[in-house]
Each structure stands twice: as structure tokens, then as C-alpha cells.
Amino acid sequence: MRKRFGRNDIILISVIVIISVALLFIWKLVYLKGQDTDSDACVKVTIDGRGYGTYPLSKDDTIEIKNGDGDVTNTLVIKGGVADMTSADCPDHLCVKQKAISKEGESIICLPNKVVVTVKSDTKSDIDSISK
Image 1 (tube, one colour):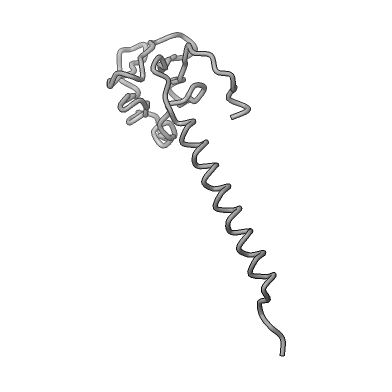
Image 2 (spheres, one colour):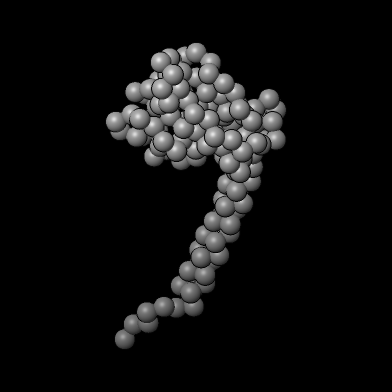
């Protein structure tokens, strides 16, 4: 008759579980720390490559983005330090389905309406977006 688990097997499994939990905790800590929004961060809105406006993430606001004819094509809501595209008149609504943005370099893009919303910040970080 053969034993299913020996003493060494239980020790090995325990060590693997402890290391996994520790790595998960460290990853969550680093990830959540990266979610902090800079106080001077803002969203830059462009339509067809031309500047439409710049809005601070620190101030709650609703921006109705209008095309050249004056028709509202997209609605951008800034609330709680994040910007989210809540409505659009494009056929696929992919921009509305994208997650809200808050960190520098993140963007929401609506190709049919040629709208690009990007988070910009004036503060320089020692860590760039690639190494994060």
C-alpha cells in the first residue's frame, strides 16, 4: 500500500501556496498604487487630429463633443478622477464599451467620428509607461 501524501509533499505544497499568495498580494499592491491619478492630469480631446479641448480630471464634468456641423457625436463624462465615453452616435459603439481612463497615456478612440481622448499629465515620473 502506497501513501498518497508524505511529509515532504505537504511542505512543498504549503511553500507553493505561500509564495503564490505573497506574489498575488505584491501584484495587487503595485497595481492599485498605479491607479492613483495625478492632481494635474487632464484629458485632451481631438477630432480629426485637431484640438477640441483639454479638461482636468480633478473636476467632474460632462463634455458633449460636437462635429463640424454642430451635432453632438460623443458624450464624455469625467467623474471621480476618471474619464468615460458614455454615448456615441457611431454604429459599433466600441468607444462606449472601452474602460474608463485615468492614467497618463491611456486613450479612448472613436474611429467613425474621428474622436481621440487621451490622458495627459505635466508631472514627470521616474517610471515610464512601458516599465510599469
